[in-house]
Image (cartoon, rainbow, N blue to C red; front, top):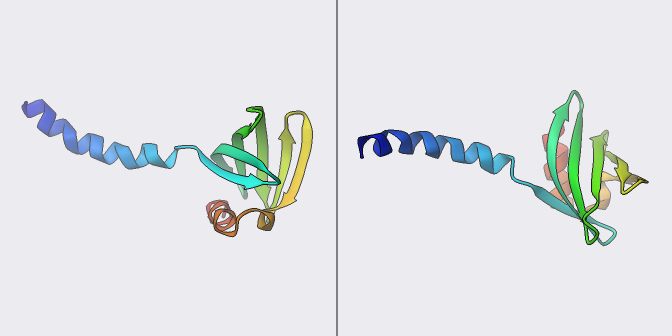
Length: 95
């Protein structure tokens, strides 16, 4: 019982960190992108799957543009082309 009381605060501290790594999503041209992110210098890498097909993608967010590959096809669009709130969230995180 004492061990459980001691460990409870540690689990509480770990929970927000795991919530930050939870997949996020946005939509563009009828495609839903479910992704996780990685920072590399001045760019943000989005990797995940797009739906409805479930195929993998890798996109790079840099200078207000999203570029990359999705299911063997080149993807390129302005960050401002997606939902404004979601675009702002991605933009802020990529600084």
